[in-house]
Length: 237
Image (cartoon, rainbow, N blue to C red; front, side, top):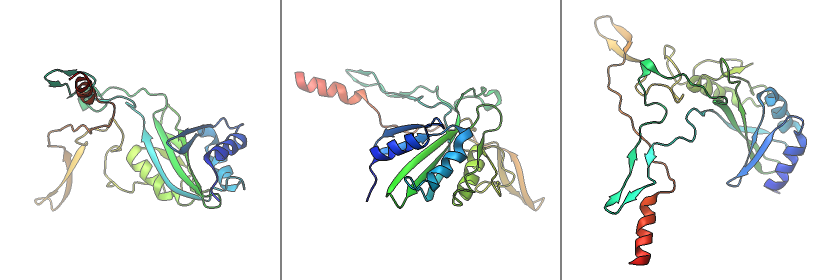
C-alpha cells in the first residue's frame, strides 16, 4: 500500500526534528533539505528507520545555483505592431573569461539525491548544500547506498564537488587532463583548452581554444505577454 505524501511528510518532520530538516511539498513531490553536518545521520535514518525504509538510492547529482532565478528573455512588454522578445545579455556566463567576476553565493553548490522506499511505495528527494567557503565538500553516501558511487564521481567531475569518504573519487566523464568543471555556471562556453592530434609530434596535444564563442539561450516556459494582448483585443473587437 502506498504511503501518502502527507503521512510521509509528518514522519520525516517527526523523525528528524533535531536535525533541523526542512520538508517542502510541491508538484506532488517531497523535497527534504538537510544541513550538511547532518547529511550522513539523516541518510542513515532514512534507510534504517522502519517507518521510512528508503532502501534504494536511484539518482544523485550536483546543482550550481549561481545565477539562480535570473532570466535573459525579455517577454513582459508588447507593442501594437508586434511584441518585444529579446535577450538582455545579463545572465551568468556572458562575460570576458579573462576578467570573470568572483562568484559570491552563500549556498551555491548542492547535492541532490532521489530515494525509493519499496516497502512504502514512495519516493523522496533529499538535498544538502556544501559549505560556502573553500572547496565544496559533502560527505559521501557510498557507505549507506553503494549505488551513489558513480553518481558522486560524476558530480565531482562536472561540478567540482568533493565527497569526503568516497572510496575512489576521480573523474568519470572528462579526460584526465581536462581543466575545470564543465557544468559550473561560470565555466567558459568554449572551454579552456582544445585537443588535437599533432602529426609531426605523433601524439595528442593540448592548446588554447581557437573557436569563437557563440552564446545560445534556451527558451524557458513562463508567463508571456505575447498572448495577453491578442486575448484582450479579441474581447473588444
